[in-house]
Amino acid sequence: MTVNVRSEKNMGLWGAILTLVGSFIPYVGGVISLIGFVLILLALKGIGDAVNDERPFKNYLYGVIFAIGGLIVIIVLLLGTFAIVPAGWRLSESAGIGLAIVFFILFVALIVGAAYFQKRAWLAMHEITGTKEFKDAATWVWWGALTAIILIGFLLLLIARIFVIIGFNNMPEELGEEPEPAQVEEVIW
Image (cartoon, rainbow, N blue to C red; front, side, top):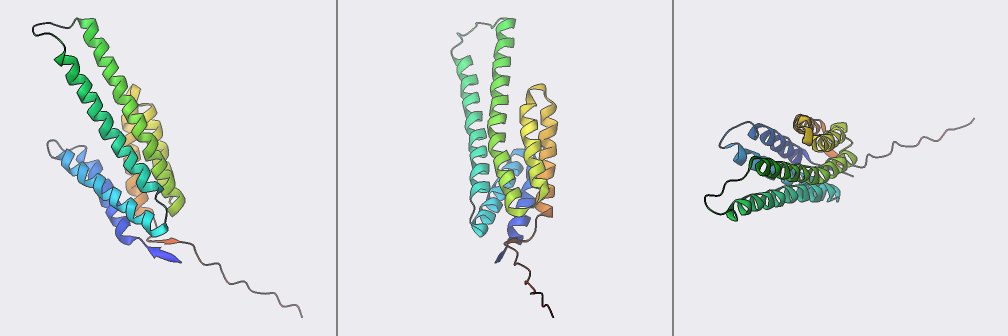
């Protein structure tokens, strides 16, 4: 039995495009990316429901929650750091550099944590759809997150987003088990 996932495929494709485009547009780019993330979540939910496998949706959702939660923690820590500093007191240069390094490491840890769940979501999509580009996206997401500390990782994360777009574009419109070809019995005369 096969199920039609054409609308989910298109929703995921447009969501992936919007998240990529939103990254480069100032001011409204965040809203565009948020719309893209929601479209991807809806697409993964629809595909998961169609094939009775919730791994892509759950893992992608966990990744988004991890990223948002981690970002909130970093912002609270940053604001808290400046809130406890007495008025008129100035950080020494070494303390400022130390704080910048700590927050950068927290930011990279946030990226790695969110990427772990995204990697799992795209690997599950590869298993479900058989689309190689989802597996490639998982690989690029993971290596991009791990190398974000040396900044080259951000380029790899961009490549991963492109592979997600290609994956949604190339995935089949119908998913499910392919019927077995009819077995022809050999007749021996």
